[in-house]
Length: 131
Image (cartoon, rainbow, N blue to C red; front, top):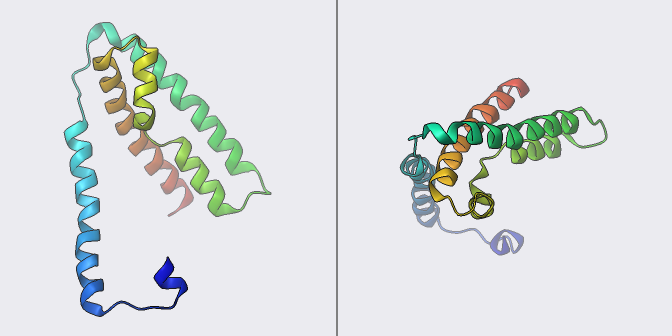
């Protein structure tokens, strides 16, 4: 940001190197998501997982619909807010684990389910937008 504000351009070789490193970020993010997924759902947790999932995503979808329908909010802000609401719940994993009385396995199962659902819902929203 500072270089841009000062109108300083980096040499092409530096930009090429940074482009290669930056391009690896997407792969690493997908790789880490794949490693973190734990799809071993236990039968006794399925009802609780369903309840938690519905309580997480139904309000998110409703708020997204409300935000998208408000005319006084700029389009880019509508889209960004809706995508934030549909994002995986992994950022709140510590809070969720605490609410589940420290059940780390249940928290991991919910986070894995949350990642999959978020990818589906965010993709569906982007398709709906025509992006």
